[in-house]
Image (tube, rainbow, N blue to C red; front, side):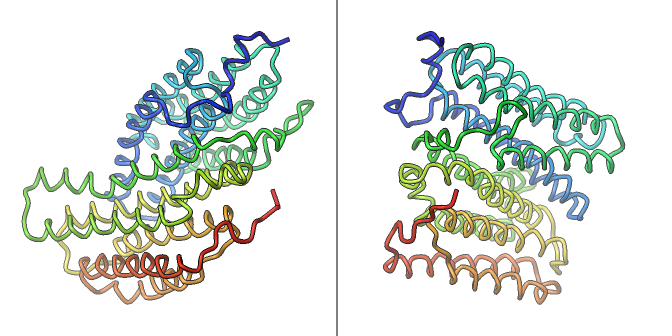
Length: 392
């Protein structure tokens, strides 16, 4: 039989929906993490570097996503839950500090902290939830993180190429097990009814994270300009970065972003299960875009080249894909106008390889402006929630 103290650990339906100050403090750590990842990609735009950055980003994102889910299911004002959030914050700081050398000499530190965050959280929750049904939920999560953790730790002591492979497999386990609701021998899967308990708090957390991530598009270019001096060329690039950031923000908040909380109220099950995956695509797109503008500000080029076109065009393309899938999963509506703009963006990108970087950035911004205007034009025909999807 669970005690009253144990029951208080779970979030009450009438609890405040706003994020706590501790949760907002946690998000600050991720501003540095995402900035380091975009800087890492900007230094070396190759397929190998992109794969390494993607693996590191997926790990960092998963820690944040699981912590956001934790504070939505449990009461973030309870001291025991706050200790778990503080532990995730400390671990995230260590992971962030080791990011630049995660595929070099500090792989053990990055992987060790990733595993420790998840495993320690699981053991603590099992201990404090004694006698409560939620203890089984924590046990399911812990079993899968122990399984993937073995690959994380093994890969940390192997060469970089093998490390990338093992960490990639570990991430597949983490992401797929969550999508399948953590099926565990003798314990079963997380009941779908538990996903229906998601609150507006979770929607707010995702919106806050996306807004913070968008800030990285302008953050590092500003720092670079401050270090190397501001000239007309850098000023122009900063303005382009600023406009791109605003357009991505507008595309995100239009309908699906602004109505995420309403969608969670109406159909929390789908929003809770799909938001981590669709938002990962959007965050990856923002990191890629930020890397492109960091290159534009720090380097003088007369020809864009494949790498720069890849990040300047690929970033917004990833964002648009994630945003389109996100809208479809929440509302059952598919934006054909956004798909047309996406085809224009990707299809004409090769023509910009011999042109100047400014032309590539300006073209991408023009496409994003077209997306934003198309969204605004079709909003008059939008009857939310439209066709509701019943599949879970």
